Amino acid sequence: MRTATSLRQRRASAPRRRAKSASEPTARTSLVEQAYQAIRRRILDNVYPPGHQALEGELADQLGISRTPVREALIRLQKEGLVEVVPRHGMRVLPVSPADMAEIYTVLTALECAAAELVAARGPSERELKPLTEASRDMDRALKTDDLDAWAAADERFHRTLAELAGNRMLLQTIGNFWDRAHRARMVTLRLRPKPVNSTREHTLLVERLRAGDTRGAVEVNRAHRARASHELLDLFERLRVQHL
Image (cartoon, rainbow, N blue to C red; front, side, top):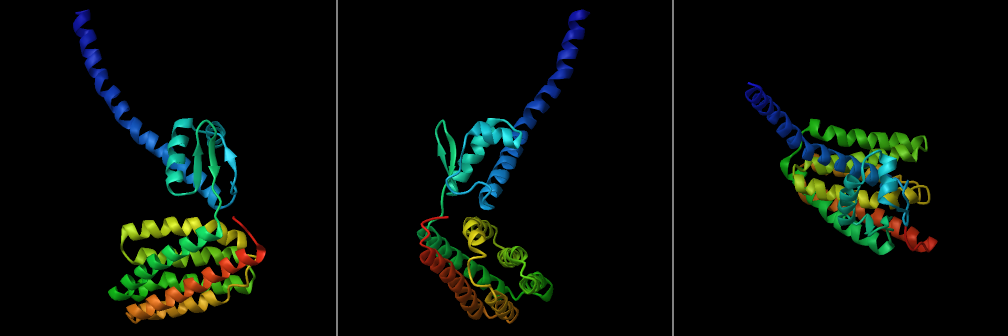
């Protein structure tokens, strides 16, 4: 009797053990994503500046998780070109050089022009264009109060919305990666560059071309917009003789 009872108890407990086992990969994936997002954001916001080094254990303690998810997150960040994983020494945040920025803007311009062409060809509705006009309006308001951080946030919202409207998931993901890689340099130099008064006007022109379904015009406006921004940033690197950010 005791043997039969024990057998039933073991069978009853087996599904619970399997359920727990099945949940473990999901839990680990969640922790890896948590570590990835936290470390990435600190790098992009220059909390971890270029050259910053940290051991896996230090990062794990800061994030309140184990070292394994941190290690997997660092591998992802290394593939994105944000860090170098140093065996037995954790990670080192990689700098962004003028040559890096020139290449990033070249790729980013091509990708965003593709997004603008897709949006214009589809003939976006006023409802779809509204977030773009609102972001441009917020940029203008921020400049009037000299709130450059708010301006940068609205500018980023405009460009991310443009990429989202293209309706191409892979294009959106790739644009986001290059946009984030440029983010550090843009934020560091934001107050060193001339006041960005041209961006709102250029954004307005781009929305007009999108509204009109003018694919060629949308691409030309966006390319000129990106070329100007790239020139200003790279010129600043040269004038200040900055080797990297």
